[in-house]
Length: 82
Image 1: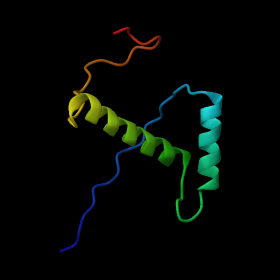
Image 2 (image 1 turned 90 degrees about the horizontal axis):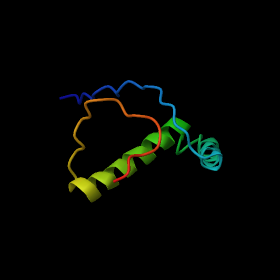
Image 3 (image 1 turned 60 degrees about the horizontal axis):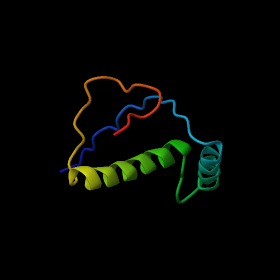
């Protein structure tokens, strides 16, 4: 019986502001790891980092559960004080 894989989710564009040093190091890493065996891209590096951090946050704050869906867009500006 053949295995069927689900198609990857569509990509969306996101604009984020990060330090120049951080994005420069990420670009250096993607450049130097672009070939075999890593075949790294900046997108792949960021997706892996976000997945790892979200897993850590779910474990830390939700006992491994999922974050509930939001019902409105994020608001720009300074973070809300706790």
